[in-house]
Image (cartoon, rainbow, N blue to C red; front, top):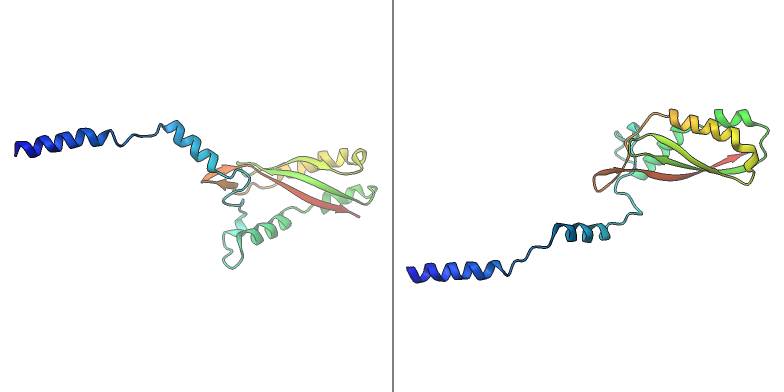
Length: 149
């Protein structure tokens, strides 16, 4: 019996050295390198998309975004603007609020007042559920083309 106990103790001592643990920092670094930071796991969610069963997440997001952002009232006050296409760079923040980051256009001089009104418009939109990456809310940048006729 003593021989078996000595053998088990000896086996236990040597086998523990075989299982070397990796430092936590190394594990975190390896995981961080494997994450694709250019994509998200879940799009932001409008309340209308919670009931959506038959639509895909992307289709529902696009429809709800189109319905929520109605820029006609803002842009119609600028009837003097030339026909142009504006590229609105917006961010849906991790808090779910909208923020206008910038406006790209060929006619930069004409859109300064419009830019201020659009910033105000986006800041007043109701917040939505943010985008998620690995269960953590993240900011999402979007580019929305707006055609002025």
